[in-house]
Amino acid sequence: MTHYDVIVIGAGFGGLYALHHFRDELGLSVRTFDGASGVGGTWWYNRYPGARVDAPSSPFYAYTFSQELVDEWLWTETQTSQASVLAYLQHVAKKFDLEKDIQFDTWVTDASYDDALHQWIIETDKGESASAQFLICATGALFVANTPDYPGINEFAGACYHTGRWPHEKVAFKGKRVGVIGTGSSGIQCIPEIAKEADHVTVFQRTPQYALPARNRPITKEEIGESRENWSDLRKSMRHRGGWPFKTIRRRAAEYTLEERHAVYEELWEQGGIHLAINSFAGVMAKKELNDEVSEFVRSKIRETVKDPETAQKLMPDYYFGTKRLILDNGYFETYNRDNVSLVDLREDPIETFTSSSVCTKSSEHQIDMLVLATGFDAVSGSMLQLNPKGRNGLTLQEKWDVHFDNYLGTAISGFPNLFMIHGPGAPGVFFTMPLGGELTTAFISDCIQHVRKEKLGSIEANEEAEVDWRNEINDIANHTLYPQTNSWYMGANIPGKPKQFLGHLRGSQYFDRLEEVVENNYQGFTLR
Image 1 (cartoon, one colour):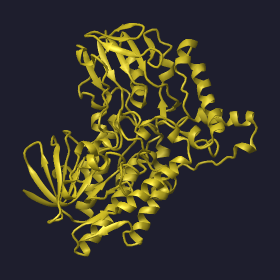
Image 2 (cartoon, rainbow, N blue to C red):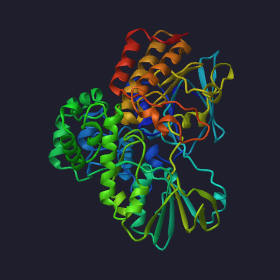
Image 3 (cartoon, rainbow, N blue to C red):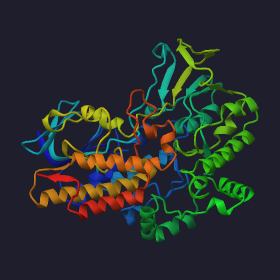
């Protein structure tokens, strides 16, 4: 059995940076394991048509730690495609020679803590074992695919693809009748692309969504040059502005008339991206009346776009705007004006069963040749529970997290010494720019590891009391907003039987301030042995 200082699970944004940081900047021995055949994490798997970063991403959905890396990589669009993100990560892996310390096509099947040795011992599906003092879980916030258990779905004889496990070979839709279940981010991105080729697309909508126009466009050389020249300042701005360098405008709704507020909405709608959410009026995500106003504005845009009033009505979301993941739209609503696209609202006409060649709803049978499941993920906690590490005294994570996803700072778990998560429950995760968030989280983990090694200690472990306080703090922040009033994957509501708990930290910049304070206060909330 080979021993390392650090074992990293996952070779996406978080895992690649952790490998680079611990190996190249701290000089530790590191081994990374990933079940995929190459780097990329989420971006290795999500290859469905139309897959893009769900944010005005370029050049900011990227690593920030290296000016040289910033200067040599050329982004081409404001909303980065999956292929571009994957190519970028492959470039990073090559530039820093990371693959020599990554074992691909290898699943970690067991991870257990040896309290006497203060070590983690992992086993793989290849029959190998390895040990390390520290285990870093960069297992992905959006990784474990959620496959709905509809009656008879396994009897369907046609091709079936989950957007989160898309094949690497091109999928041909020409001449096919395609059924798509799900209209979250991946559904809204792939449906317009599939409809351009398929004979017919039947969309089975579980929940109507608010989607904002992406306004994707080429990035100019001037914009790239300016970002490179000012990268240090932009990075600081991202750190202190919730992960993006954009200066938000704090308008007070009471100081505007209704007509003036609608003029603001129109202006931000034309700008596209997430501007309507972040730059309209203070309190949109907390004040019901103001949120209702913005919600109705977006619904009015859907009515304007979709020509058939009956179809438009089915597409009307009825939850609070922004309390599900905000989606950027590249022609989704326009797709319903095509003759080869039809919409089934599963709220009114639920799926009852599948046959070998059709989907049977309460009122109709829909013949299909191919099925696309855009049904999302067991988000944030799912990948850790799939790993199911065993902590002190054989405690499994599934036992630990049976009722609450208790942890401290979204990164450490009581009963699991020397284990750290990147983007775990209670971390900012998708509410912050994830590459930068991974860098900043790794910096905190690095401080913890260096302290243990410098003081010649065996372990660092979160306290149970600190976990309870952290859970209360996360809930208190969320409860000052409208987020908990919507059944979303932010609340774990998309997975039957999953504990209902808000899974993210909504104040990303303050969160990273908090990590720094914990270090300054001699690792407050941790027990050092």
